[in-house]
Image (cartoon, rainbow, N blue to C red):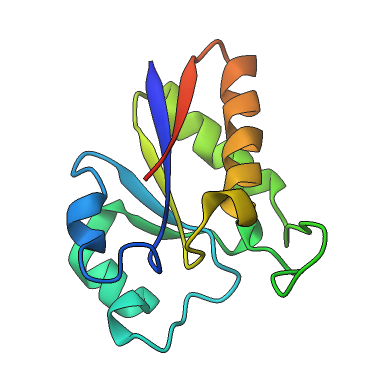
Length: 128
């Protein structure tokens, strides 16, 4: 069984790097991978996670200030994530939101899990 983890760096501002499992591909699902906290900008994340870090702009929520989730352009990234899960990788979806219940990353995880299921891959979703 594969796992899709989700994490918001505002819930783990001091220990984000330790919170994300070492074996996961880190998929940044923010529309813009910037933060007021420099350690959470895409450059810093890419430097830390190296080949495990991916910015998935298409999975970013265009309606991030409130309202219904409106993903930017998800089709290719949902397919990509399904391929990675089918190849045996676990994923960790990264956003800034403290609560997974109020964040689009939960919706994204469910879409990816549905795609994986179509391929016969069983996936668990765990919020960190």
